[in-house]
Length: 409
Image (cartoon, rainbow, N blue to C red; front, side):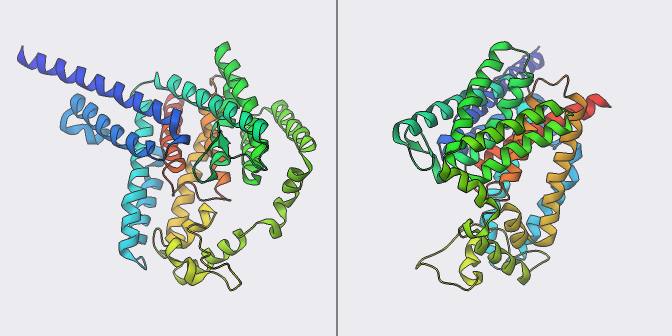
């Protein structure tokens, strides 16, 4: 009798903290664009609630279930090992080990918690849909109203508040593809209506941010996934809409489209890329060490006239920064992780597109857009907002892909 009572208490405690875990990440998804501190709070609450829930239900054996989906096990393991090697052989071990524990370990735990967000409760799929739609509407209404009231040269604010580090263009690739596929695929009329309304507002913000990187990432990701899903009519529609948008752009913004292929208008990006190559050549196998780009920029920046105090912390290219900091070993394991994810994601989309309600397709497309955006920025392995969001969604989407793989087998 006493044993049964303990089991009931443990079961209820586990269920309670599962709910806490789900609510915590609903708030995280809802509010992450606006708060630098939220990711840290969500991280702490998420880790604690997940541990209590799992220990309550599974006891000391809970750790056996904390594994990524099988198709990512080896790529992630070797990526993590390469990061350890890069840290150990870093040009500044103390700096790299602090970056390792401050960034890499929390991002990995966000990835694990993303897996559990869908693994624990299928109802959380609806939470994610509404969190994305509500956040999209807030960003859309706030961004459009700011532009109409203030007419900024480029839009970076929402309801008068500038998103940290001018990050509005970096958040749009998360929300636009997702809302696009929810609009096409969701089975509930009102969900599609809200997704369509939010997408319309986001398109206006997307235009007014005048971010060339975002202009590239969003349509390419959507078009590629539509081709994978063999939806040629929608490909033609998206291409036509993008062409119409281009001809409706103000002259100043139309110039920015033309400047995409003109490196004279890339700002300091050319010098930043040259710096990363110079650092890479010094230690091509294991790299200079995690987080060392910011430490070595002054030493390796190419010759030229720079303003006094000119310094850059990141290469504005995720892949080049990984290459110079982690060497060939870290770079190829990183590409392996991404390639394995996209390969399995595209296979899952092709097999389930007709039955999918838009969530799997939307999430894969959004993450693909962010990976394209990362060619022009450093947002996956750095930061307290966009990077945690990426790794959380990377885990959640990997779980959906794994579910499809298991169902097909």
